[in-house]
Length: 280
Image (cartoon, rainbow, N blue to C red; front, side, top):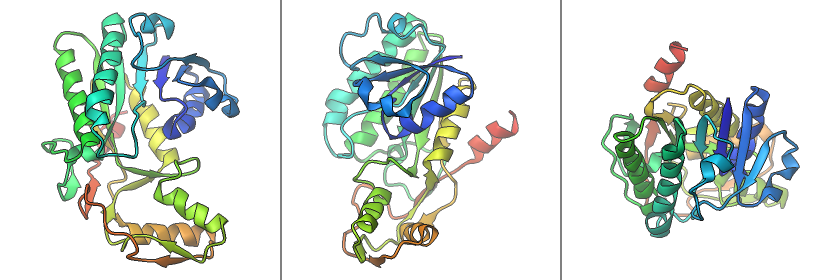
């Protein structure tokens, strides 16, 4: 299968490309700078393309792929910036629209748990979305745009709502990377929030495995949570990381306030994912 992957040089993309290639797929990695993935030493076709520039011939430029796996998105981690609505939303919609109208039949896009907004507890795909920051709003709006696009074009859509991830090569601003950096510096204390918030975490290796499985189904699945389905407190998670890696560092709990753009307790429901796996 020929699969075009946008955002291929990002955290998810760098972990995902080797799996696609190992599984025998022909991969077209779409990046702004091809030098950012040369260190992966993988056998795929790399295309430099800035999403938002002229897209009219992009389907042909990417070799007319069977599947578009759309990971790309800019402006993070500033979730509150209007840039997501003003720039990212129209840019990514237009790119995917051109790909669909040019002939791609299977589209898999990464969404976010922030589409659920401040709703508490277990979050299922059939809940009404209530995004409360521009990033979540823009992602949710893109999904709705694409669903309307399906009314006029015959293509399958998989909207993969990611929750929280951790692993090597994660951006420096993330909790896991900040903890590793503190350990590498020999710091004795790690400043964090109170850590009582409940979250849904998966290791990046499991996340990309799920993304690959879903994208390769070539089905009209719609919205699906990519999550563990198991809530865990951030404090307990960090303590597990410290213990598992035998790091010598203590937690300075309550140093930072809790984020105001996400609820204290939420996690994903996995029933839809489990049902799909049972039928495979």
